[in-house]
Length: 218
Image (cartoon, rainbow, N blue to C red; front, side, top):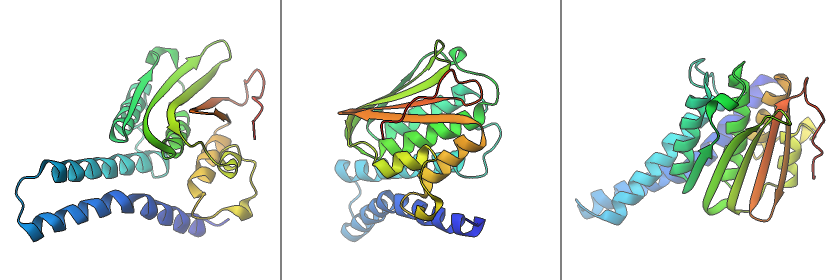
């Protein structure tokens, strides 16, 4: 697939995901201007929440799918701050094990894949959720789990993330899954996912040194 098609698909997906919070801001502003309302706690909350969601999505898109500033994801502390801000904006809670537990070499691709998966799975949640990231030193892999009212990812989404779907099936509806999986593949990272009622787990490890490949459930 050529770069132009990838770019247009990505732009289409970004516009789709940002239209809801931006639209809510627009509607709120029209209400204020039309009614000359100067103070309304419910309206203020709507505007503030929508603006925050839009801002956090833009930050995440820039880090994962854009031309990443080398310092933006250069440490796990910076990556976890982005994850915390994003989950807080989407009714979630975030926790992680100490930063020193995680690999320190070439952290950017690890962070990009992790943020991409977080974005996709958090979009399936219908209410509060808890996102946790830790490093399993025994299996030598990063583990991210989400618990809450998640509807889970579709089978095709899993296939794209794990690089098992044919390119001819790429569309604006799954371009982010494809690019996230491509990040992992191009950086020799093995990405495996599993999910059950109310829980989603992502395993990420160096494909060259992995003790064994985690079997996919799909």
